[in-house]
Length: 429
Image (cartoon, rainbow, N blue to C red; front, side, top):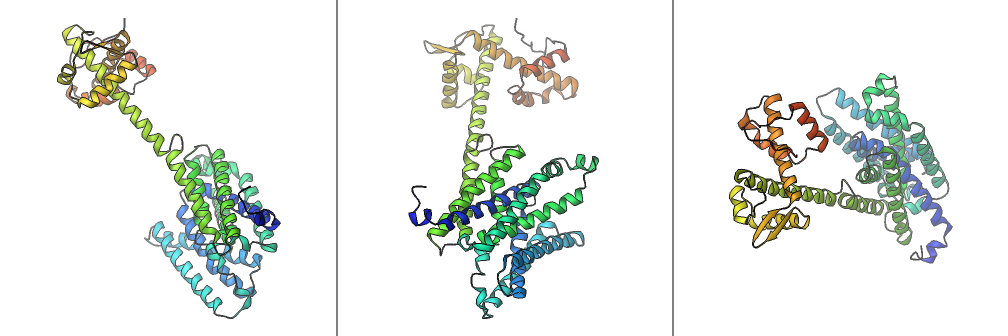
C-alpha cells in the first residue's frame, strides 16, 4: 500500500468504490464458474452485450440513470436474449453458436443505436451513460454503489445456498434427475444469476468486457484445481486482485476506463496460470513429458543390454555404443545421454571404454523384457491378436505397467514360460 499515492489512500471514497468493485467481481466469478463448467461461456458473452438496449430503454423511460431502473432494464434485456437464443435453436436448423452470434450482434447493435440517439437527445442526465460500455469504477458512488453491492451480496448468498444443487446439476445431471432434483428450475435460477451477475458489473466493468470477468477467473482457477469448492475460492481471489488493480488505475487516471484494465490484469493471471500452474500448466506438462521420454529411453537401453546378454548368455558383459546400436539404433548423443543417466542412477558402470550392467541394472532390464513378453502373450491369448501384431503395442505398454498390474497379469496367465514367439519369459529368482 506504500506505493499508492496519498491522495488515493486518504480518500475514503476510494476504499468504498474499490470494495464495491471487488464485491461485484467476486459475485460474477462465482456465478461464472458454473457457467464455465457447464460450457455456457458464449451465452455469457451474448447476455453481456445484450443488456445494453435494456440500459438505454430504462434511461429513456426513467429520464435518468437510476440504478434500480438500470438493473430492471438490463435484466429484462438479458433474459430476452437467452430466450431468443433458445427459440432460434429449438425452432430452426441454426446451431447454438450461430444463434448466439446473431443475438449478440442484433442486441448490441440496437443498444448502440439507442445510446447514440440518447446522446443526441439533449437530455443533461445522459452524461456518463457511455461508462456502461467500458466501465468506470470511479463512477460508482452513493446509491449506485449501494444498489450494485447489495445485488452482488445477494448473488454470493444465492450461490452458496444452491451450491450442492448446482454442483450436482453441473457434474452428474443424470443422477440429479434420478433423485428428483428440479433441473429446469435449477437451470432457470442459474441463468437468472448469470444475467444478474452481468447486470451487477456493467457500471464498473462495462457490457463489452463483462463476459471476460464472468469466465476468465474460472478459466484461470481451473488450471490450479479440479475441486469445485477450491475453484470457486480461487476464481474469487483472482477476480478480487484484478478488480483492485483496475479500481486503483481508474482512480489514478480518471480518463482511463476500468473494465479494460481489470480484464488485462485477469488475463495476465490466466496466462500465468496457463504456464506455471502445477499439474495442468504447460511448463509442468512439458516437464512430465520430458521425464517420461527419458524413462522410456533408459528402460529401452537396459532392455537392450539384457537382450544382448540373453542371446549370448552373458548379460553383464561389457558393451560398446556400437554393440548397443547394432541391436537397436539410437542417435549417438541421445544414447550417450541415456547411458550417463543410468550410470548416475547406479544401473550401469563404465570401465575401459565399455558399459556394464550392475546387479540392479540387470534386474530392471529383465523386468522390462518380462513385461513386454507377458503383455504380448496376454494380447494373443485374451484379445486373440495375431502374434506378429502385438510387438508395437507391447513396446508402449511395458513402460506403464505397475507392480500390481504385473502381478495380476502373471496370475491370470499362470506364470507362463514362453511368449507367443517362443522366447523365454524371465522371472526374478
